[in-house]
Amino acid sequence: MFEDKTLVCKDCGNEFVFTAGEQEFYAEKGFQNEPTRCKECRIARKNSLRGERKMYTVICDECGAEAQVPFEPRNDKPVYCSECFAKHREENA
Image 1: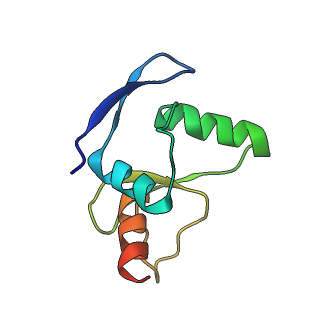
Image 2: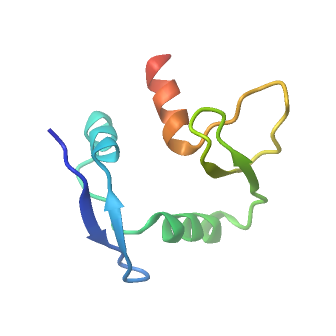
Protein backbone atom coordinates (compact mmCIF):
# COMPACT_ATOMS: atom_id res chain seq x y z
CA MET A 1 0.00 0.00 0.00
CA PHE A 2 2.75 2.47 0.95
CA GLU A 3 5.91 3.12 -1.04
CA ASP A 4 9.06 4.99 -0.02
CA LYS A 5 8.95 8.70 -0.93
CA THR A 6 11.80 11.14 -1.32
CA LEU A 7 11.08 14.47 0.40
CA VAL A 8 13.10 17.68 0.76
CA CYS A 9 13.91 19.04 4.22
CA LYS A 10 12.58 22.57 4.70
CA ASP A 11 15.51 23.49 6.99
CA CYS A 12 18.63 22.14 5.26
CA GLY A 13 17.26 21.47 1.76
CA ASN A 14 18.62 17.91 1.66
CA GLU A 15 16.55 15.04 0.36
CA PHE A 16 15.45 12.31 2.77
CA VAL A 17 13.38 9.15 2.44
CA PHE A 18 9.95 8.90 4.06
CA THR A 19 9.82 5.11 4.24
CA ALA A 20 6.76 2.95 3.72
CA GLY A 21 7.04 1.86 7.36
CA GLU A 22 7.08 5.47 8.55
CA GLN A 23 4.09 6.27 6.35
CA GLU A 24 2.19 3.33 7.83
CA PHE A 25 3.08 4.52 11.34
CA TYR A 26 1.85 8.05 10.49
CA ALA A 27 -1.41 6.62 9.12
CA GLU A 28 -1.97 4.46 12.22
CA LYS A 29 -1.47 7.49 14.47
CA GLY A 30 -3.83 9.58 12.34
CA PHE A 31 -1.16 12.08 11.29
CA GLN A 32 -2.32 14.01 8.23
CA ASN A 33 0.92 15.76 7.21
CA GLU A 34 4.15 14.30 5.91
CA PRO A 35 7.36 15.21 7.76
CA THR A 36 8.93 18.45 6.54
CA ARG A 37 12.37 17.97 8.14
CA CYS A 38 15.00 15.26 7.81
CA LYS A 39 15.87 13.19 10.88
CA GLU A 40 18.95 15.29 11.71
CA CYS A 41 17.03 18.59 11.52
CA ARG A 42 14.14 17.14 13.57
CA ILE A 43 16.60 16.12 16.28
CA ALA A 44 18.36 19.51 16.17
CA ARG A 45 15.05 21.38 16.38
CA LYS A 46 13.80 19.20 19.22
CA ASN A 47 17.03 19.75 21.17
CA SER A 48 16.93 23.51 20.62
CA LEU A 49 13.37 23.70 21.93
CA ARG A 50 14.02 21.85 25.17
CA GLY A 51 17.69 22.47 25.77
CA GLU A 52 20.64 20.23 25.12
CA ARG A 53 20.26 16.65 26.23
CA LYS A 54 23.07 14.15 26.62
CA MET A 55 22.72 11.40 24.06
CA TYR A 56 24.41 8.00 24.12
CA THR A 57 25.50 6.05 21.06
CA VAL A 58 24.40 2.41 21.15
CA ILE A 59 24.08 -0.57 18.85
CA CYS A 60 20.49 -1.79 18.41
CA ASP A 61 20.07 -5.22 19.99
CA GLU A 62 17.70 -6.26 17.21
CA CYS A 63 19.02 -4.96 13.87
CA GLY A 64 22.59 -4.01 14.80
CA ALA A 65 22.25 -0.40 13.59
CA GLU A 66 23.93 2.45 15.42
CA ALA A 67 21.44 4.65 17.27
CA GLN A 68 21.30 7.56 19.70
CA VAL A 69 19.35 7.22 22.94
CA PRO A 70 18.67 9.83 25.66
CA PHE A 71 19.59 7.50 28.53
CA GLU A 72 22.67 5.62 29.67
CA PRO A 73 22.11 1.99 28.69
CA ARG A 74 22.34 -0.79 31.26
CA ASN A 75 23.57 -4.25 30.44
CA ASP A 76 20.49 -5.97 31.85
CA LYS A 77 18.02 -4.52 29.32
CA PRO A 78 18.00 -4.51 25.52
CA VAL A 79 18.38 -1.21 23.66
CA TYR A 80 16.70 -0.62 20.30
CA CYS A 81 16.92 1.96 17.51
CA SER A 82 13.79 4.05 16.95
CA GLU A 83 12.36 1.77 14.26
CA CYS A 84 12.87 -1.47 16.22
CA PHE A 85 11.55 0.19 19.40
CA ALA A 86 8.38 1.24 17.56
CA LYS A 87 7.99 -2.28 16.17
CA HIS A 88 8.31 -3.83 19.64
CA ARG A 89 5.88 -1.30 21.04
CA GLU A 90 3.28 -2.21 18.37
CA GLU A 91 3.76 -5.94 19.00
CA ASN A 92 3.22 -5.50 22.74
CA ALA A 93 0.26 -3.13 22.46
